[in-house]
Length: 427
Ligand code: G6P
Ligand code: MN
Image (cartoon, rainbow, N blue to C red; front, side, top):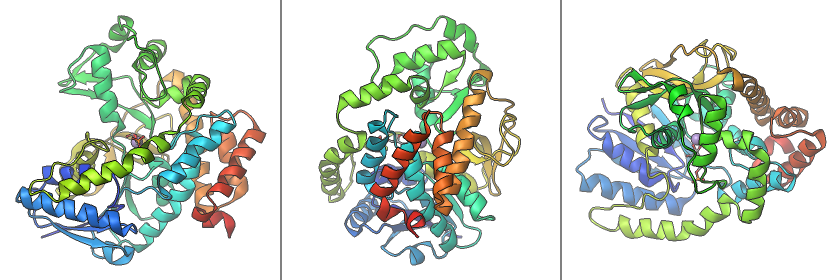
């Protein structure tokens, strides 16, 4: 039976990677209808042309239908893959710059920047949950993926949703390099919360690695650290902690250094991306016109698209594959509540992800991770209700923020700057 897969945010710069991901599983998805949806008609048309040309060139039995209306795009879809950024890069620039003015790391998913993004993302995901067919799976990349997943699960009970992030793939590769191990066959039990995961157990082709011994002899790489490239900082952290931190750990353990670096840098990541996007889209348009397009891998070029399509295939084909996803804890991580949304290895088959029992969080980051969880829960509630006091409590609960007045200033500036995207706060 053929299947319909809707893609929400199909004009995104990450789409060439998603199209590649679909191609890599084309045989398993043969006959599928892809409903590409984006309110941005121009970029939607571009990605539709690109996908159609790439599928034709490789003989893939996949059909693309473009939609600028949400309802017909989702009607009859068994899988709704969400990969959009409400407000685009202009809104991301505000998320990254407002906290920084108040001495707090400005980042799109971590801290108050991520909180503001959650306030924009959550209402759209709730609408998608309302519009999607009952029983459809929402496979969500929209950030902050765990807060969004938590909001949908608690405020639209019965919705089937999985939060995705492919960060652990890149992080595992980075650690392979730092630890002098081959990346192929290396597997780490990353557990915790999205962009706040930790790994005490690492295996190479199933054989446990003696991590404490490896870390004891780890050489801190030279070249220094910046907000974007920081293997030396990661190595330094791992030696202190005694296990592997994910790459967002720098924002917690080097908060003030990163603030100084971000300020010195002068432009935000969003501004840097905005500057490259016109040329990037132009190059995609040129490729889409070729008989066998090979679009740029500059955005989402690595595992990003393949990872998402693998999750869809694991559900659709009842594969029972072990995949790291964001889902209800259900006791998998004993240090967090059963109904917390956690990032954890899970077995994914037709009935959804079943998280694997992982035990407690490592002691040195247990308190931090629990604090981030409390923040995330408040953030999800604030994003749903638009209640200012809950929003203030969320920011006051976040480990980056050490003053009520700082929380208030960031909140007031953020809500004002994003007013048009935050109907729940202005009602
Ligand atoms: C990583 C994170 C994603 C995030 C992305 C931003 O992949 O896991 O959650 O959206 O980085 O990348 P960018 O190139 O837009 O800064
Ligand atoms: Mn991520």
